[in-house]
Every structure is written in C-alpha cells, then in structure tokens.
Length: 213
Ligand SMILES: [Zn+2]
Image 1 (tube, protein in one colour):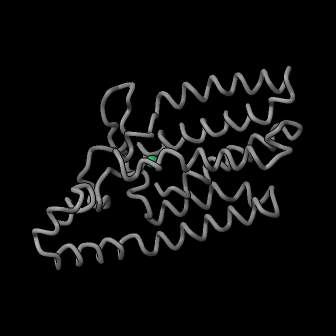
Image 2 (spheres, rainbow, N blue to C red):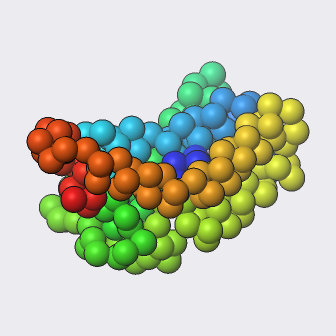
C-alpha cells in the first residue's frame, strides 16, 4: 500500500485514541497524531535499501508497541509529565507495526506488482522468511488503495480542523495523484529502459530495472 495510506492508518489510530480518551495526551495535543503519521511512514524509509525488510518488523514492532502502550498507560496514570512522550512513542510504534502487518495484505515486492508474480510481501525477521502477499489491495497505488486511504482519513477529517485536517486532506490529494500516475510512471520507465543501451542498463541497480529487462 501507499506510504500515505500507512501514514493515514496511523492518524486514524491516533484519532480513535483521542476520541476514546479526550483527556489524555492523544486528545489534547497534535504531537501524538504527528508521531502516529510518522510511524506509519517510517518502515518505507527502507525503500532504497532492502525494501520491506530493513525497517519492516511485523512481529517485533508489534511486541515493542505492546510494551510502549503499557508504558504510556502507566505514564498517563502516574507520571503525567512523561505522558505526552510515552503516548507519542506508543503511537509511533503502533503505526509502524500496523504498517508492517498491512504490507502482507497488499501486493508483492516487484516493480509491476499488478502482475502478481512475487511471493514476497514483507519480511518477518521473527519467522526468518518473507510473508506472502494476500493482495486484498492488489498493489500500491491501486484504486482500492485510495479507497483505504480515504477510509483512514475520514475520522480525522471529521474530528479535527486546522493543521491536522489540512495535513490529512493533503495526504489524500497526494494519494490520488499517485494512483493516477502509478501505471503511467512504470510505462515511461519501461520505455526509458528499452531505449537505453544494454551496457548502461546492466550498471543500474538491479532492483530498479530487473523487471523491465
Ligand atoms: Zn511498507
């Protein structure tokens, strides 16, 4: 799924927490919302180095998130001064865990994921193997990916105004543009790779050209 879908999933989580516990840090500050959005994005910072493996931890992020939630609950109850940080960390890790898990529901790791050739969705370091793609969302940037992104955006748009609402709407806008360009981008890349001399193509990083040869 798109990075923005993952970020919006984090925002939805933070929004839910803020609505359920309006007196908590999640309900009184935008920092936990920002932390959740960043946590949702974070795993995909491995795009250029071991994508869906280096920073994706479906099991370990979940364990870390569970521990961080306990710390956040304890901090909220006993150390209010630390609650904002603890809640933000818990939301960051929870969103990163949700991201890593969600990747198993999308398409595989390939440059034309709609072909459905890859059996690698996300790497589980705990299981020491790749989890297979379920393809509920066929590929990142698929129309249904935008639908999921919008669904995650709705609660925050309804609950917040100001900068949070603007940020969420901007993320939806970026998602919509990405969905429109997803396949054309690949067609252009294919044309470029086709036009390049073979000696140049072999020097490009294999990950970015292997499916275009
Ligand atoms: Zn990912």
